[in-house]
Length: 581
Image (tube, rainbow, N blue to C red; front, side, top):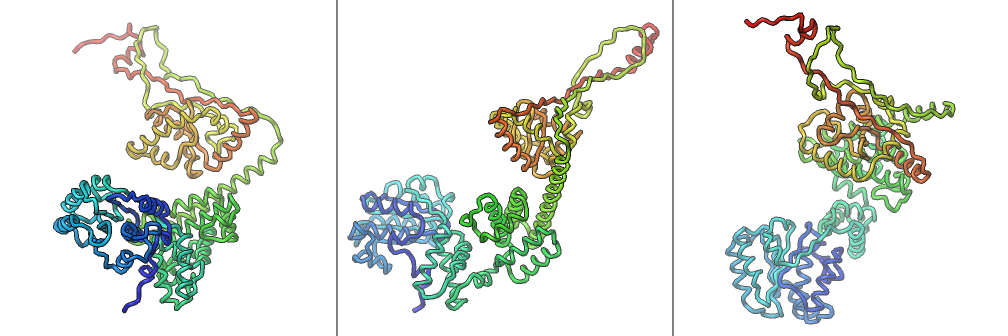
């Protein structure tokens, strides 16, 4: 006789042995004890999370002779069910019996009374694979079921079921099992099977299983056969093509140092050794995230992949904002792999982008530090910020001529013919002065921000792509008021673009045409966070600076005159005589 697989041998035999799904276990147990079992249940969730196991436990429990401990496992009904011989528990795999004839035969048998227990239970696995006609036939029975029949439907894809079937069942959603719970379960099984399982290897298996308990047991069995009783983290990496933490740390170090040659060599070496690059991408993102978590919390217990020293090393490599941008890039790459023909090439390009991001962040930090050093040398002299100046409107000059009455019609010109107005001098600098940012924030509120975000989302989703839309996609709204809107730019380059002339003026008119008549300003995320902290301090001290936002003026121009009108305007109406041909 062949040996039972681990997932078969250690399938839960009582409700207490079920790993995870506590909400389902409690509800089912209470229903059995209070004799309030429904006529139809629907178990939904990812594969390997215990749907079929729970269905079998419920089937045994409702026919168990000892209600206080159902299913007891000792009575005749439980024994027959455990051996697979119970005449009143019928399991159907809808993947094989999908036709309407199969369901009609099931319905005919359902009319017969139970042979051994109180209820006749039908467990229909992968019920979403039933044909449309078979689903309709099943629906009729669910509407008017015999009193002695209980249907338990299980599926990984509930959205494919008829809504009328779902509405007639008590639905329970099974979730992925927590990695810590899987790790503990694997360690317990390893002790019973008398082989050594390293806790880190158990956690690695739990991560590979992605919340599926059955998958974790299959991986454990495969690893035990390979390792001959001593399962370590290195063995799991070898079997499933995973890079070790030191190898991944070395790759990250090359990225932080801008060593592109080293990065490319490591990626190609990993590919030659069968390393799963998608797993590697996700692991790098988790490690960078650990660095950010440790930077703010200094708590090793919150780390997912790294120990305290490794997390500290990453945290010291770059600012949290840079690390989070790197995580976003890696997450996006992981999603985009399904659309590319070469994951390795895409991963190499992603690492190049990470190097560029780190270098740009380093240069920004160096510029900020240099500016700070220069400011510290300057004498402490209070200088009031210059007020914005709006230039007078200059109309086109014409040669002097005798007094005359010329009717000129005024109209607002388009964006291309606007005469630039003078904005604060800070708009041409890399960074807005802190007093100016605080003055802007002081005139913003949640109501305007909510309105601006709604209009911005509508604009980005509906507008034809152009350079304004491309720029706005690289920002998010930090604050908004009646006269201004403060964008948080993803990079310093985007911030400088928005704050520079003439783009700032053109962007203002573009936003105005789309319902946002507010002057745009841009800051980096780091500057915005610092400004928020200073804003809170200023609020408490009632010492916030003021800043007057001057909108760009919409000037007027004279209507273009006909040639004959221009002649009359130049020489005078009395000196010009018009002859009709």
